Length: 267
Image (tube, rainbow, N blue to C red; front, side, top):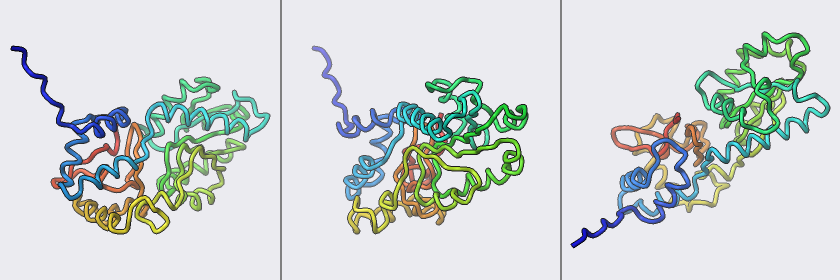
């Protein structure tokens, strides 16, 4: 007699979510199932809700947002020829912005010669670059961009007439800090106070669910500054290539007591 096909023990909803998150390294129906099981019977429904409410940006989403960003930049700078506009990944090598640098190569309207490093911008001939767009995927509090920008600002400003920060996703908490920059800011999407799922402005979770979420955040044994997401951002956000620490640690923190779902830095 033929052997009976083994029944899939992973719930259908988790299999569907695995398809949604599949761009992120290591995500599978089994990894989602293991992540949910650690919540225990009392927390399984809440874990499922967290997964449904998580904003996930796939490779396709990132490509679409990059196209929008490029179009907004060109509209913003008016008659400046595209050849005089440089797109520069912001941040350190191997950061999320470096991933964007590779994705920009396949973005309509961007020639490969327009994708530059900071060093290449500084080495360019006078007048060669009229607009430098420093591209970043996400800013939660603005602190990382602020510290990076202040290291290069003195060299960049005398070299380039117009400097822009181009962000795919900007958290509202970062805007005041970024608006202090001498650079202009263009973003594709912006999160609001209601996207902090632990805040009073958010109605996604009931008060008792928010209290329970914090208990699970404590269970991860993360540092206190990450308990509500870094900067108390309280986000449920992840990308194909990373998960920001402004998101709740239940998504990204890995410890002896907790298995993370998303990686802080993925392929």
